[in-house]
Length: 324
Image (cartoon, rainbow, N blue to C red):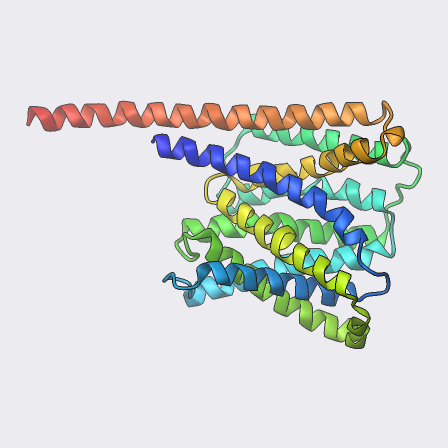
């Protein structure tokens, strides 16, 4: 009972760390040389992440999935490949503002898909919190664009990226669905490894049909080091934190932390280039922080309620056994 509340708190703390790591990853990506094949780099990055995870799994039993589990991992890997594939394709055909605005739909999509899959309960409070966070994230995207939506033009590339966002929202839903049916391992490291491995293979196959592998010869030592950092931390650790949280939280609650990524980027900009921060950043920042605070309060209250309910249900049973 107390363990459940503690697990919920740990899951939220882990996702706060997730948001920080993802926010710090963007400057690292900017340190890589231009002209490198992005799909191949993503496949290698996920392969490095899977290797880092498998080293943690070494010597521990229960790493091999069942056939239904393997099929589900393949779908989960397809979701990740679909998101990253459409992201790289759309990045050259639409604006960053359009993509950032579309990406805020992911937590709301996760809630809707979770309801359809039966892994989310009807919760008006959670839906309101997600909407509040989405508005805040859009406001941050508006601030990053200089306080204007003039660059927001939706077209075919944006439609493709929205499908990628749908795939991204489906990933935690499939994880939760597979956990509830016993198809996936109860261990977060195992689930992380197999989903990253299948995604790496799928991204590699996609890259072979689109990109020229000889472009990887342009990799410098700095590129390799950055790629290793992104693989171990930005992919391996973040997906492990996501999988650990998925076992405790609902998919929508897990994905809600994506609202904190632009807020983290804003804080980094504030410390590195404070002259670029204006009042435009304030409304979105306040809304995002408020939505996260409400999410933490909601789950803490829900956990205490469940603990109290379990205690009351156990007490009569204990009295009955004592009387007997």
